Image (cartoon, rainbow, N blue to C red):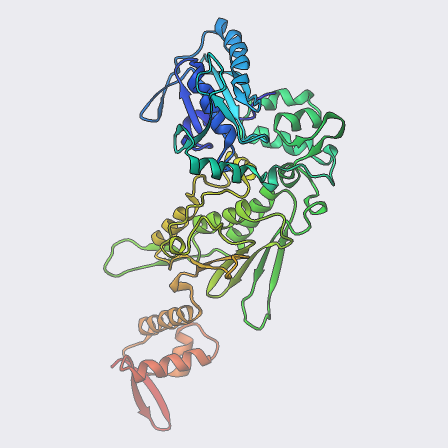
Length: 486
């Protein structure tokens, strides 16, 4: 089985978080087996991790070019590794592949979260005695689990995340070979070139999208959500709805529904919002030489909040993701709310750091496609984008049981309905003062100077308001009133 990952992106940490990658300068069996065990236990449900043999590390930074592994040693290391994996109980075998990086061989060991967890490994792998321990990952390190962490590990192991479960209502043929190959091409995987001669079964196996006995293989839910042309057949409400409500009465409402593979839904919905809902405006501050461009909703914030909803929603709950756009806000609602590991005080303080990931496999695929961030960096990015745009911050709303989550992105103050009207009025007032001649004129004459065919209500109201404020002077001319400079 091949590893569907671009080795350069894997090493530089642009797709997989650095805490999920362990670099080893050489093959040292004991720490490697302990780390394989820790990744397989996947206590945080983040998708396991990778060990790369042949790269030295200093202060968590891989040193390139790699030291590499001699080609003549590769086969021997693979055989030894297979033998040492019998020190893990129950038996766990990672996916291992030698890869070329900067013309040198490195050995990549992919350790997805295991289905037989919790796993324990011999403390001394050379003797493989009965003295075994549960190993877990703590940030970027491998450690023996404490008694409390063992209890947490057993709890996490009692439930396989929904996206990683086989779907008994579907068949392997429901997966799309074309979509899988498109994914491999987009992420720059070496597996793409080999996929020319692969069938659906082979490629789905390489991507770990199927499970079950050989006589009854079934696609996993993540495979159906991302690599099936008709997702709605298996997940009726796995879609994104964008509703534009320009008026509270519902008049003029438009609705767009995005279906298909969830990564396509996300991209199409973001493109629609960018083209039809996000607007910019240039603001000139007299005290500053340069003009500033602001947006009603900064795209980076919209992208992060919607991507987060696709990543963390439950696909077991028959409700769509709804993006509701009104004149004063954009509200993105998904089901359910934040995990209980995120406290109310954390939400109030905007320190949103989930301990448990609801869809670890979906998250991995979206990160490889650069559609979402990892390790709780999504909301901080949104907060930063709103601050840079001088927009109000995000608002979070959930019910008591955290059955739903609504994230509100307030519109920039310059785009509020009242502000738009005020801006237009101020603009008209400036135009009036620019075209007004030295001698007073009738309102009809002023309208012609402005290029109007007749006196509009807005012009009449603006001129009278300017006269009341002393910006214009009323001059009585018999029964008529002229307006001039004060």
